[in-house]
Structures are given as C-alpha cells and as structure tokens.
Length: 490
Image (cartoon, rainbow, N blue to C red):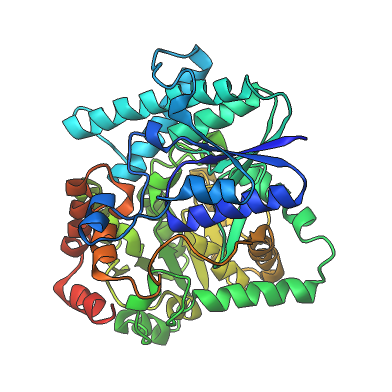
C-alpha cells in the first residue's frame, strides 16, 4: 500500500484541523498516512496559544492529544526527535545551505516584522542560529524517515517558505517524492492543497484555466462577486482591517471629487512580505514603492490628475524601526507632492469608498489592485503582482514605462480579475473532520485564559516579551482616537 507523509509543523487549531482532514482523505483513498511531527525540532513557537498560560487556567493546549487522535483515525504517528539526524546540525551541502539562508531571512522578516532584521541584535541573531539548526535537522530527519519507507507517493507540508518547511520540501524533492503545499483556505473549513507553494506567482496563475475548467463566465462572476462582498465592512468580513472603517469619504477626497479632476488612488503595500520569495517577484527597477509612486504621481499630476495616498492599515503592526522608515517614506512623498491627500493607516476611511471615488488606481502589488480591477477600475502595478498575468491590470516596472501611463484610463475587462478571484476560491478543498475541533473551548467565545494565551504568542514571535511587544507596537503606531475605536469594536 502506498504511503502519504503529512508533516505537522505547528499546533494551531486550524492547521490541526487541516492535518486531520488530510489523514482522513488519504485513508479514504486507500493510502497509508504517516504523520511526521517535527514541532520539537523547531526554534520558534509552534502554538497559537501559550501552553504555560493555558495550564495556569487549567486548560489543555490544542494538540495535546494529537498522537491519540491521529492514530485513532488510521495514521502512523512519528515524532522527528526519535529519528536519526535529529541532533545533527552540521552544515549541509552548498545548494541546501544557500536555500536555507534565504528561508532564514524570510522567516526573520516575518517574526520581527521588519524589512531589515538586524542579526547583530542578540535576540535576532539567536533566532537565526536556531532557524539554521532547525532547517538542517529537519532535512536530515525527513530523509531518515524516507530511508525506512519504500512507497511514499506524496508528502504534505505547510507553505514552504520558512526553514523547516523549505528544507522538508527539499528533502522530499531530493528523494523524488511529490510535495503538496498546505495553507489555510479562503474561507472557513477550506484548505489550500496544491503541488506549488501559495506564493508561487507563476504556477498559481498558470493554474487558473484548469481550476476554472467547466465554469461559465456567469458562474465565475458569481463566485468572485461573493468573495468581493465578504471583503467589505461587515460583522463577518474576511478583511481584517474593515472593522475599523467608517462609511464616509474623507473630506479631502470628497473635495477632490468636487473639483472635477480625474482622481488616482495610490495604495501602499507591505514591501517586506515579498523580499525573499525569488526572482519572479523582483522584476521592477524601482528602489522601493515610494520612489515608484513619486515618479508616477508626477506623470499623472502633469496630466491634470489629482492624487491621494492610502497607507496600508497593517503599517501599525510593523516593528517600530520599520514603521519609522515607512512613515518617513510617506512624508517624503507628501513633501514632494504638496497637493497629495494622505490617508494614514489608522484613518477610518473605507478603502472601498475610496475606490468608488477613484478613476484609476496605482498599487505596488497589493490585493486592493485585484479588487479594483474586478470593479472595472484601471489599475497599475509598480511591482510584479500575483494576479498581473490574469487580471486586466498594467505594469509600471521601470521609469521607461511611465510613457504608457498617460491619464491612466482604459476600458477594463473586469471579468479577468474575477477569474483570478474565482480561482482563489475554487482551488481550495472542503475540510472534512469528525467535527470535534481541536480546542476544548468554543472558538467563538474563548475564555480569559485562552485570550491571554493567544497574546503570549502573538504573531508567532519568538518569546513572550517580543509577542507582547508586538501588540504594544500596534497601539503606539495608531492615534489615541483609532485605538479607542478599536477597543470599542472588540
């Protein structure tokens, strides 16, 4: 009987639910699932709820019974620390080491919420060393497991970007085994399961036609319109920032509208998110999004277009050094463009009201560009976007491309953006479980202990102090008014 290896990299309840789904799916397909739990080899928190805090409140942590539950539904359960190689952190070959270092930098950017993680800082350097050990030992233990199995048909593991994910993927690839990447899906009880990582810009767009095969244009539009509706402000919105938005257009933008000039909306992105995802994401020649926006704004303003800048709401979540740099970039733009209307990250302006007031949109590679194009708005991207080969958007990747921007207006085929949105929805699987869940409490009404336990590992940041600090940064990076608004809506 062929086997399937399912790599457990963390005890987040949603991921545990997906791992359970994969086991059940493989059992139903007549395959022997092997659950490889590598969590004890990892250098950063594997839980979304701090175990010590939960224990203080007498609450069992999610996944405490993972071995019992997985074997109970037909899986063989293996802890990586019982395999040869789990304590061997010596250097791998040059190819693996090079890819490992890229994955380490990518992880540090995420964990420390900055585009420039400083490894000279004790905590950052220690984490980098731990991630290096993690990657090497995971590679070796994965290969050790495979040496004992002759008939592995497929392996599942989350994402593929962090050191343990990347090196496990490489271990399977080096053994000639197909890897399927796993992520949380676009909606509840949905899971991304594909043979390419979710951040693979080219392969994801190349898969649109096959995923949508058999659907009519009307069906595609219906799926996309439902997704777009769920992004709008509402109690159950899938847009995490919309809860803080109001309904009214900012007065300065309303004034632009009354002026009768065409309006271009510029939307910043988190530049750090895509820094280490490979050359397919680095096609632009701009130094950064601010230098790109500066030249594009100048071109549009010379053509009689009024401009506003919407700063991404997640700027508040960045480390303070990153926040300061990004804020300086915005202020630099405002100084160079005195008529520019700046809408800060903590302003309650509704992004969708802004889109309704705009004639054209300029993004770095933000998802709002996809949404704008789906609304029929001419959209320019100054960097390679994950939807740029499908949606009817246009690229401004170099200064030479500025000759094409003109007034930034064309008749947009909104259906193309909706095709990519429908692909995002349709590519996911429905998650099948026994319905028991992986928390001992109602996720919709977590007890105090669970709330405190979540704070203690906020964002997966290494260490409780850093986790609490990440929450502190959110509040100090927003105005008092915005913080009060956020607290009232909790």
